[in-house]
Amino acid sequence: MKLFCLLGFILPMNIGATVFRIVDTSEQIKEADGIIIGRYLSSKSIRLENGSIATQMFFKMDKEFGLRSDFFGMDEVIIHYPGGTLDGTKTTVEGVPQFVMGEKIALYTKSVQNRYWGMNLGFGAYRVINYGKDIMLVNTQFPEDPRVGQIRLGEFERLVKTIKGSNLKLVQSTQYMENPESFRERKPASVIEGKNRSLASVNDHGENSSEPRSLDIIWLIGFLAFCGGIFRLSRQKKA
Image (cartoon, rainbow, N blue to C red; front, side, top):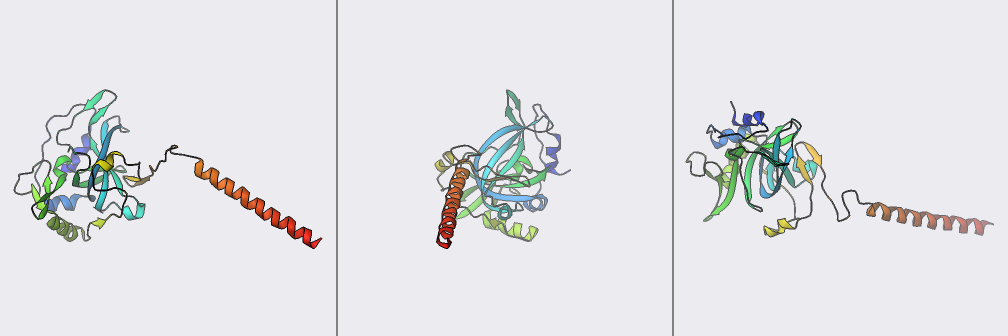
């Protein structure tokens, strides 16, 4: 049974120890629907349609495979993990990764019921760190395992290209600086949740601000008044 099948038994209760079956990096890449490299922004708990609790983690993407960021025009993505705390109810799932705001990460995703889920919980997630002259991916669940614990970023990207037949795609965005403090004051941005395009661009007047529409109407009235004046002037000259 594949590790990502753990998602199939998300229950509204505390869950004990999670047992992982160790598979190599190539196998995880092959199983993944999507792969992202980016930075952790924030998280919140939600209640799913079946009544269970899940945690939405928001990530700013630097590179991705399989998420079609260019098609959706998005540079953020929502990744779901089982468990969380909502309305006084806590569901604990051991093995779910924990991140710090602004931390650089890499992770695998699966698309399940129109949502992106973190594949294989913490086993499918890495911290991206500088180690001397190298940039390393360090597994959040088994950081010291000689088989899967660490891999150079360049080698990881070469594996993705070999197995998936395509490079990790650079996600174009200049919205945030590298300073993690900039994430604290970030404005809501467009995100991807599963295969749906979910717009979250909100200004200070709320999600459905009428200010731009009001300006359009004022401009239209002025334009029509100008056209009316030209028309009346033309008729007077003819008379």
